[in-house]
Image (tube, rainbow, N blue to C red; front, side):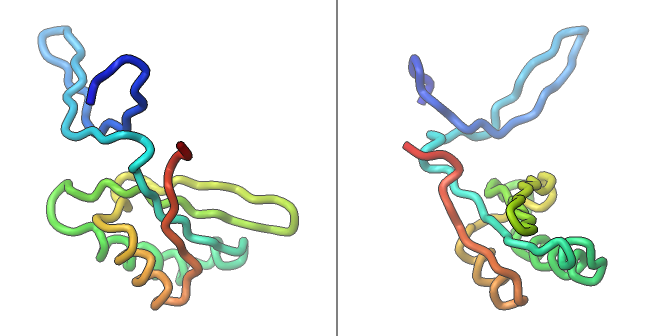
Length: 119
């Protein structure tokens, strides 16, 4: 996958050993194939602690086992003409976007899967 001018999404971590910093790549895929989950929230819902916990629980149930969850979740908070995008932390990544969308819809949230970047 590593080619000149190729756009990749890389999952990994930074490690420091013997005063040297290295990037350990755990996975990579073309940016055009990367999906994300968008959750639409009104400001009132976004600030409701009960709704926050409900959203948290739904997403944590969609993580799967281990560190395999790679699909980022982004909250879109809309008020009148303003939209704010909030990328949720790595602990809220989900294993499979459509299952997460279905679980969110079932819990009463507006959600959809979309491509991270256009072609």
